[in-house]
Image (tube, rainbow, N blue to C red; front, top):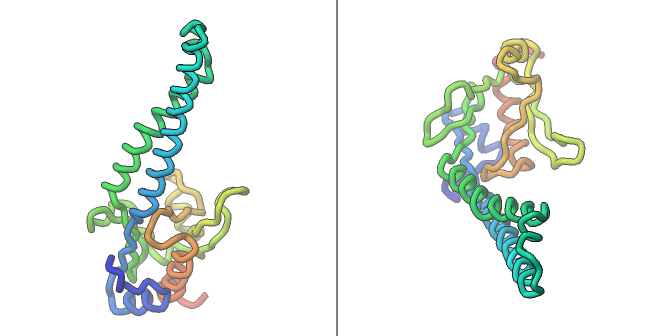
Length: 195
């Protein structure tokens, strides 16, 4: 996506009306920020671990006190998680680079310019798009509220009537919501007929 791409709701609807697809790529900035946070926490935990081990050995205490202490094992798990597992997971996420693709037909996920099978959600299957808290204490997120018919079709595959829009795209959930809402308002009525 170039810096000149206008992803305002009006511009997106105009491009969709011309039959173009809108690709909203994943954000590298969020992945790099997550990597930075994981590395800082991991290095902090490692420094604390080294400090505790050296202080225990310098005091002449038995190394078995370190080995049998559950808090030290929790530190080891945290260090491995932050310095090994988190970077691997974040690099895999960067490599996968999923994008949200809007079209006059619906919305789908894509990877490397190929729409992923089974991810197309037609506009007529969406009753509404809402922006609300996904969990009681969590941040707000965009969600698709499916029609009753779409919910019945998807229940066999373990889906619920509310599908959260995955975040991590170049548009934050707060900026993505009006884009999705405008596209839905423009293309769903034509497919549903008058409501």
